[in-house]
Length: 230
Image 1 (spheres, helix red, strand yellow):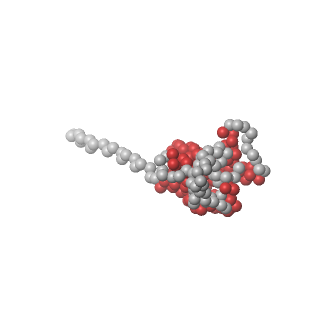
Image 2 (cartoon, helix red, strand yellow; image 1 turned 45 degrees about the vertical axis):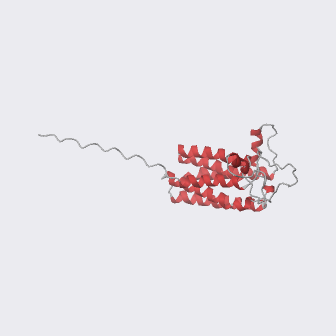
Image 3 (tube, rainbow, N blue to C red; image 1 turned 30 degrees about the vertical axis):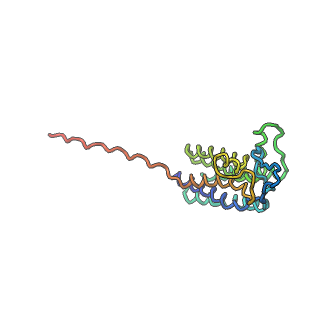
């Protein structure tokens, strides 16, 4: 029963990410044909998905503001119908706290921690960028695992949070190219560079939501005992 509850949340998060993909299109880029060097950023600890590099950054911010409200309402309604409304409270609180922190730091134009450490630079991910929904969802999934007291969900949430951090800081085309996929990590004429960073975490969520736990072994039946003769 618990697995059915949190599979709904995984599917909800995955659908919200996939629906946002058109907003992650960038202006197309072709490498010059005159032999000049053509490079693309591979790693940025402070965020690889800068919102102002996208085609419609304002629409992206508006979409995720509405998605936060609509997704929170859908999640609360789902747990209320399941008779466990209090289970949704930690998830909603974690999402609201992370999103609220992002809103405040963005409003004050926070520049991040002043440290040469890559981990310190990663704190700048809390300022709004294209990966902000991944950060909010990672916090919400960890809170959901605690609320559901599910070790399996906790392990998945930790693994997905690591995937979300990779998607937030590393170029998707370059990463997939290194995994053996036939992708050009530099030339991007269609402006699709940012899409894998959102599509891959979304598909992982949907795959986990659709997965079924392995069926348990049936209990062993005892052989019929012998009747005693009186």
